[in-house]
Image (cartoon, rainbow over all chains, first blue to last red):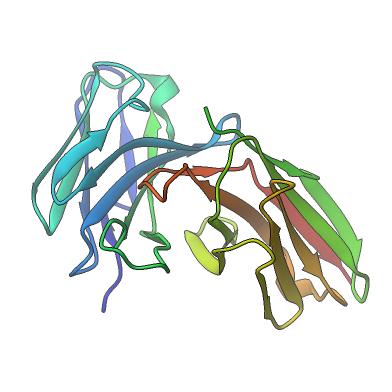
Length: 117
Length: 112
């Protein structure tokens, strides 16, 4: 298995531009998570999906952020308009959580390093 | 709201020494995870602890869970340079729901 695949690996954009981050979870995983990592705040859960349905988006900072999961193999996290304070590493993770399995650890993608100038 | 605290946040140690990283959490949970992150890399799962008293070991690392004390420890035995990384603990919210809350991480540096 190729693992969780994120793209792009690096994104540099100017303030005000729209940014779209992409994630392909591991096949067969039914839960998908978007995390943001910064030095100041550590790893923050932004939103998670179960069976393609958003379950909890309470971590989404504000209306500029939106996430979708149109099918079991693809998710996007969009920031519009982007701001310098959005600069961070954004991780996508997937798991089999909610399927009654006990070892429901998260598998993380390589992350997208976002820099908003 | 579940809070997860790790200490220390920074740890510098010499090769061959032993040390323990602590992870405290604020509400009842019976699932705790340890992850490792190398600089500029993703997070790699180390251990999954699923019950009170659980102990897992791999190589020079040993993790344990005390759900009554809401405490997990990650013990490092005879540290080597390759263990230099940031270690995160993460706790399930009650009832095994999908939310996993992470501590801020412990940056470990093992010096020759």
